[in-house]
Image (tube, rainbow, N blue to C red; front, side, top):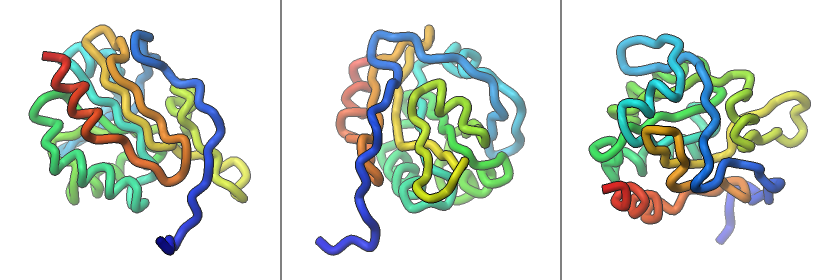
Length: 170
């Protein structure tokens, strides 16, 4: 297959694993109407949550990730929240196009990505970091029930495995 991009191996990730407590954070949380500072713990207190780290809004992996999540209807079974370096304004545009029923945290300094071990320093761009694709299924106490983090760029979650993990919550 002739790709228009190069697949790149990413360094090892020191991310939360199943059974560990996911780090809490507070960032602007964007929905279809407005945004306000919110903590992850306040979101997971509402019920099981799929936390989805993705590259900046508008990047092809982000489009693919949210299209797949939309098509599978994960928001019908758990709360789904995304995290990326994109601003609340960019998140509003993404929510207008896809990611129905999702809320998105804005993490422009990639501090949350660093706390989760999913930061991706972009080659040839000093000081520019974004989020590598990653998914964490969390219960109401922020305990990780399922974790997947990309080991190469680009890479996408095994959506069947995510769906099975969501089903296992019942």
